[in-house]
Image (tube, rainbow, N blue to C red; front, side, top):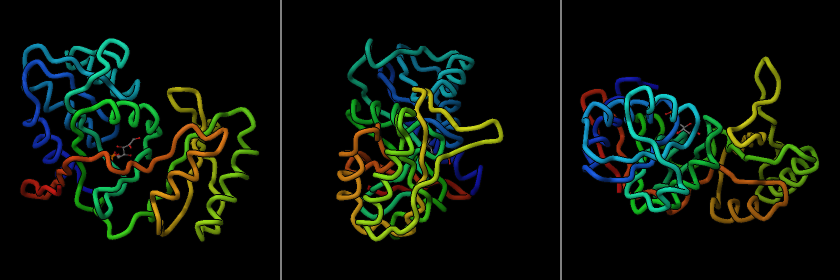
Length: 226
Ligand code: 5RP
């Protein structure tokens, strides 16, 4: 993981923003570099839709004008990080537990740019545990259903609920996160559909067919994948 690479990617993405745009702001350390670079450009008439309370706080601090999906339902460009970038720009996201708001914002966007350090690019998705957002009510029952789906995808390990010292992690929406150590996801589209079909699963971290461009930070600058 390289902070310089994340910074280079964030700064390169900020160059894609034009005055007057509605911009989706991602969540995480790479997205934070983008938010800082965007604020530094001081473009007129920007409205920014943050994907988490964390990002909202940072953007507010830096003087960016915030909006919501309700007030600006069409977003011109969203820039966000990823935990893994696989073939076809299929992503795993949600390491920062913001996947639901992220996906809502990405799906409302005309264009999405994924920014990351070089270590995030992988030949096959699944080494990074796949985050699955689950309603707290009855979550252990939902976890059993998730385990059945995972087993059907040759993933023997059940997903584990995400916790910190202070207890279970809650998302901005008050839900829980289960992380599935898939190791290899052979059919991301089928897994995405099967997880989404479960009552109690709110969203999963597979972002498929949503990325228009990936900007990968290098030590000296950046490379692009599209
Ligand atoms: C948050 C995310 C982040 O974009 C992802 O976890 C990457 O984070 P970072 O840029 O800190 O490596 O999906 O839910």
